[in-house]
Length: 333
Image 1 (spheres, one colour):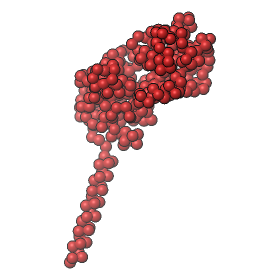
Image 2 (cartoon, one colour; image 1 turned 60 degrees about the vertical axis):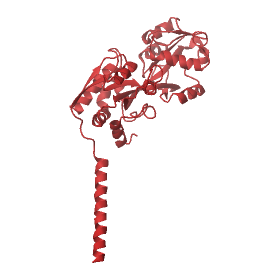
Image 3 (cartoon, rainbow, N blue to C red; image 1 turned 180 degrees about the vertical axis):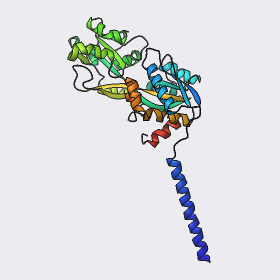
Image 4 (cartoon, one colour; image 1 turned 60 degrees about the horizontal axis):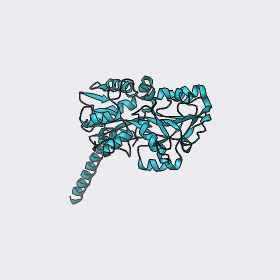
């Protein structure tokens, strides 16, 4: 009888363990529930910017996959405006560069206080350093910019700060060793051809219209000037949001080989922390599993894929738990 009792106990423990194992397995394999009906605003950029039409394309894809999620792409002032709108609870979703998201999260300039009520969903296209000159200028490196006139893009553009930071890190002080000019990207090639500037900086996605413009006529006469590797190493050590990249060979006429040594920041989508895990999971899943539709709709949509999903967020700001659940489920984190 004692042996039978022990057998029953052992059998009961085995059955209980098996039940626990199955339950645990069910939880591990179970997908998150569909989100509840809700209306959301997605902070983008100005009407003429890249982010506004991209936002419209994403909103349509998400709503098709999850009709309960109705998203409106909102016209805004861009990344800093979006993060302040997020702070004030005026948008549920927003685009930002990972650099500005990092600064906002940590209360660094230009943000006068920490903004931490948001987290990352997924990453997409990058915007990259492209400083170009003509060969007859004699410019081959940043050291050669001494005494030159350099366009940093239109006043207020992202190139203003990054351009000054990079060039001054090479020992050339703005206003003393070189002269900044503030010319819109579209006017840069003409200003370079006319001799009004010696080099032009644009920080944008590949390919960039202005660089395509000048290389289409000047070809290999266009020179790309990248930071010295040692200097860039030091700067990246202080800025985890900067990512190295090569300008792809064949992208621009006259440049068949990769141009290593460039870098940039990544466009990311962020969400208010109050967004439910179910909604964050659904948005992340809808965009990554309908990647081809997004690529067909918008040129930059091709970069919003599983390969790039975590870059620019991982190690920079926290992930939203719902997005993190999907990315881990897919082996992307």
